[in-house]
Image 1 (spheres, helix red, strand yellow):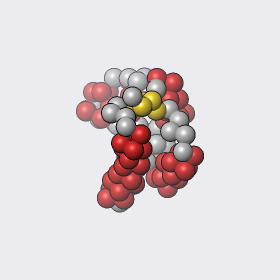
Image 2 (image 1 turned 180 degrees about the vertical axis):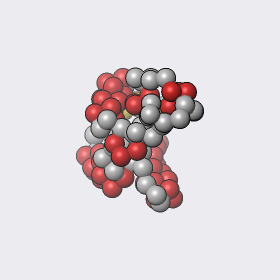
Image 3 (image 1 turned 60 degrees about the vertical axis):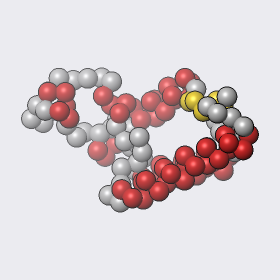
Image 4 (image 1 turned 135 degrees about the vertical axis):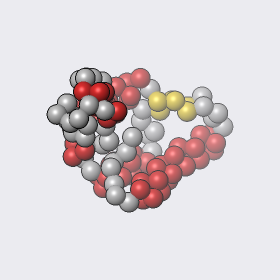
Length: 111
């Protein structure tokens, strides 16, 4: 998941920087596995759902012609957790940067 942006290469770059930061830390500390905690996963789902889909979460809503994006017109309460970050791409990239700068790797476990 990420912040929706019309500049997809920018999203890829921001994601790569974030992932490289995590991997570099794991390698430097001698870890072989990185996992997201269940608590962090639930908190992120709550964040995504809290935006009510954001600017693009309404794509494929129940008022649209039935198809792939709206589960053939059948409401699915879990579908909203798959929406992009609703605060916009710039805020999403800022969140990633703030998380990296914090240095605590909150929400991850290393083994």
